[in-house]
Length: 223
Image 1 (spheres, rainbow, N blue to C red):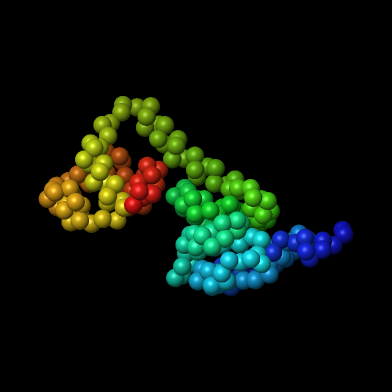
Image 2: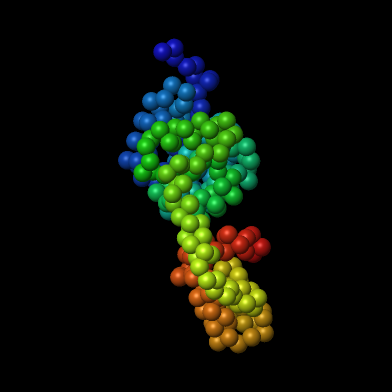
């Protein structure tokens, strides 16, 4: 094999808080003829501190890190350098995380539990300006839609009223029951009832499911 000139190699910044994992990823990437890890960061804070990353082609970013998450770091780096290619590496096969990372500007989303080849494919795709989503996510992303289809095939339950939906939207945006009561000129008890009714009608159990629903409805982008 003819060696690839250094100038043709993709320059990778590897951001991962677990040193053992980071070193394993470095060995994987450096083993490819067309890419190399030129710098490392142990968390989002250090990645952001590098500024615009003008000397980097692709950032491989862990999602779950202390202090500053991969999502926050991605947003800040894309604000500074919109053309920067970022690949998210995570254990979370979750549509909510995927949507937020893509919205923040990440081009790749790869699961740590997937074969190493998926990460390498994502790096090359991101460097070329192409979006790459781990194929293993297909099942996870399709499951909610299948469940929704099953629900729609049966008797349709009444949805939340306009007032109940408005209360739920404000809850998702982070307002307390007391704040919403003041905004809508209602009692706190009434707000609690509206929230409970809306959650029940929509089949939402807990805050995580509420946040996913809010993302789907676009409520969080109006906050």
